[in-house]
Image 1: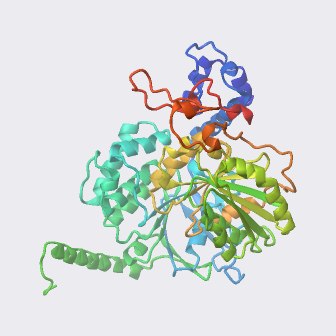
Image 2: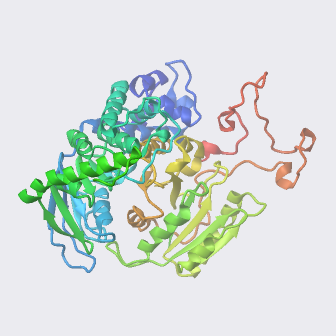
Length: 322
Length: 258
């Protein structure tokens, strides 16, 4: 029986009982349901609205049941480069919890690779690539968009624009996701974000007053906990003023597949692998060597040194001796 | 010829999205050979978008409604525009019109209907827009590159609540992100050789009061025809009256007219 069939015979009481979110949907369409539970829905709701409600309920139930489902791996099957030659990397599989860096100059095809993943390409994009989700091809539902996107994005240019406090905003996001234990989730995100940011902020701080670092920290913690997108793309967060190692741990800890476009040596070496992009194609997949990993410690020391010099400038000191 | 009707609030990025998308539609690609695209731009008082389209080498016509209701103007001219497009030998005709009063939509049954709306317009906007959003086949959300993932998700969920059936796409009018994907959907539209005899998805607003006819003076004695008064309550306390929700309000058509 379809939702429409069910609704045609339903009473207002049954509707409230089985689909508690339906009343709000109807309210937004200008229909106030009668109090009496025995009233027939079909008597107060015209056919067009009833059909819309049925579509909404079908959508909502798919959304709610998909809650449990997770994506274990994304596979990109190689296509061709800008000149039409086959790309060198024929297959790239990224599992949940993996961090893969994407490196390559501007215009090399990084954005197209990410777009292919987001659109779950089936040989129907300019690269001819195919993208598999858990080994399966062509799942149309990721293309329907909206609240079911495969890829969540974080970048340096993104800001909070809404006029709300941190706590209220997180609760709003959680509600739109229909998450359970909203206060618990809000607190968890807030605590994680404060651990990443260094400079603490309160739950009632307006999101628009957060510093760059605090904003980035909140976006990362929120995406880790609340976003339904299994893949997180991080674009250039090198100067974000947050603890980058912890940030990756937060995302990986939530079983996200992390793709990171970066040219920051520390971030690049923190990844499990890096994909080299050029001429519109995946040229190579590189795993950090032992020597590179050993250099990571030195790079971190350099980074800490620079941070310390920044701190001294901030305090009004001179840098005659460094 | 395929026909794509694009509408959306002013400054939501319609022209930018159309231009980025057309660039893909015109090119030979995995979906097939490049198509010949033309645009009819509808606006009220002035627009320079026709020059922008022409600069990109697109056949373009503009229509300014001036003193007329822009939606009535659209529907009275749409068949002529379709015939112009056929005469130009277009494979795809795009109409672009701004939804100025949120009461209307230019969408025609069985003609691809696209609403462009932007992330910066505020999370309550999807509820305010009305038929332009509710009855669209595709909702394109723009300006995603400058707001947080969380806000994009909340905004898309709000759009979904107003229009559960639409496909929602995120397209960036500046970088072009998502425009290839949008372009691939244009090719799926039905062939339209005429819209003569077809129906609008949503009826046009009730009108015809003295102000439609040029009255400028304010006061009850000058108000003739289809006039409705705001309900301010006894003490004037109830300031928020949603006209569409008033029972028995003399709206022509509305939801039932679809």
